[in-house]
Image 1 (spheres, rainbow, N blue to C red):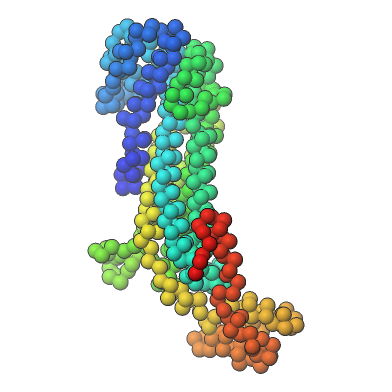
Image 2: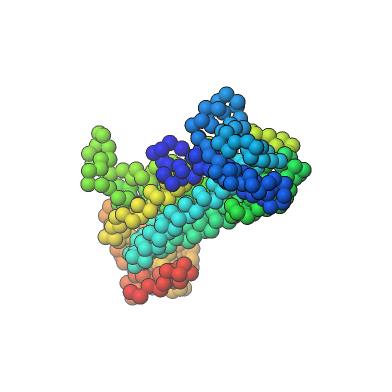
Length: 435
């Protein structure tokens, strides 16, 4: 991922430097296990533990030998010296380093992303509580539907964020397995107790069965969780973009004092951050396709997945974390306009109350078919002209007045029926509104 969309902490996790640090840690742990089993002398451990590497030197050597692990081991062994260096990588294969280190990187990434998603969730929860009594029009198909509160809308975001956080944690656990089982994974050249020691010390579980690679269904599940997180953030961003549209103007992402919206049109206040989040979600979904295609490898191993994974996992992890950080800023700085929400709620003289009028007429013993025609005609007339509003048209209808005239204020009360929105707050542990 380009630096623009890559948080520093995630860049560190997927850097070559950190990867080599993990490889070194794995090699040292394997030697410790071999020494405890009497396979190598314990006297060799002090020098092995002091082994060092130079990432630049490794890259230069790899360009000549065409193999990153061999380049790493060559540089590492030079720092250790003989005879101790000959005990390093004993019975191991490249993927013992690659897959085990990558499992650690995925877990580290999930923790960072989870932390930043928790911040998004907290910001959304605060917004839901603050606006639990802010009336607005609910919309379906982009058309005003019935009254809701802005807090209730945001509560839905909180619930989805909770699921995304939980899903990512589960996927990280599934991907958090190591393997130190040698070529084709049979432990023919390495004791299973070495594998157990390495994984335990790294905080990983031992993969139950692996070939020369950990099966990539684990990795595709992790990528799927990232893609769903991105989709959750995209859903929130998309909603804010819609609410910021000129003809709606109900909520606006933050806009700096010196910020410019357009090089040509000074009036523009474009939702650039939420648009960026939506665009990056597409990138992550694209990476999921690649991760899914990486699951089918030849026999016990090929490396068709390797080149792709060097791109998609650093990219996706950095992108999702960046999206979370940006959405926290958006929610913390969101400019909500309750007065505009209330005005839009009264669109066309209150057509959002059409169902309540329909039900009131049905309860007055009018047939549903007749009631529907009366209400629909008034609503369409109200929306197609800038003159008489929906309620006024109904009040001008003698049949409607005769049946529900005394209940008109009750029918057009936006709070009627919203008492159950408190249930969403209870279920999310956000507390019951008190006012």
